[in-house]
Image (cartoon, rainbow, N blue to C red; front, side, top):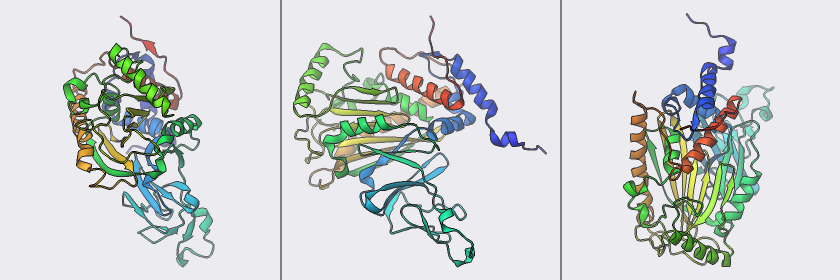
Length: 427
């Protein structure tokens, strides 16, 4: 019978950690990753430990928990979490784990409660996590104060909610300031989720993000999306045409006059925020390019706002238009399983069936999400083959993917205790 040593318990992934660092250090820049990064269970666990348990992860919108007692839940890896609004409008994030015997407290995706009560033995917690009741059977010496819920770092940035599971989260000051600046015109607290969807993709989470970071595939895969979306990422896109640059200059002048932020901002490779036009003559990501909601968001006075594109690594991309917004959340479930949640946001006073029709609003991205799911799953099936080897990214069409892979390599290596030497591909 094998004996598990203390060292094994301390670092059960020790060999995988060393092998991963070696692969990261030797892998040339500009190539897709070696096969284990997309399908190996041990490397997936390193991704969860080194990325999703250390970085600021997008979880939802503050408008989803609008009043005292409103809560939402999600799971990051093996960690169920609950986010609840308490007294004074303060948001709290906790491990969704009772301090008695570990049962989940909240089993539904969202709801409203007066207190957080464990369904197993009715231990009762205040909305700020303090244990209020554990029954008389715990004994006279039982200390309620020592058994409050375990907090999770939570920050709100321009209406976006992020959590970090690390004991010492990285600084998020730039993140908060940038999101607040770009999203101020949308009056984020006065939005609501009009409709949402959740799909599971049989693909590694990195393939889902890689697919999003390029439009090399758009012409062949996304006819609905290209009714409104420009293929160019911005004027720094090396493929941008003179006609597109002229359109950008014209629209930027309009947005400047409206005092609406549009400038390209990067926070390293983790965040990218920019407003860029949709196809000339279209104002929204709908089948006909017309507004999906007749009530504009926030203080906006025009539907023709292009798309405010917001990237947050490791798990979100977003489009904010004049009439509605589409936000995306990616969460890994396993080495080859990823869940993608899409939410469509509108002004909180917009009336369904009058100002907007959910089926019309979601048609473009429902189609696009399904197309992307098939692409990612076929990508995964090919990568699992004995024939797979890392292939070259296009410096012109796939520079966004290269940026993501650079960020991933640097971030994972740093969490494992070293930084890879990023080299340009030779020859």
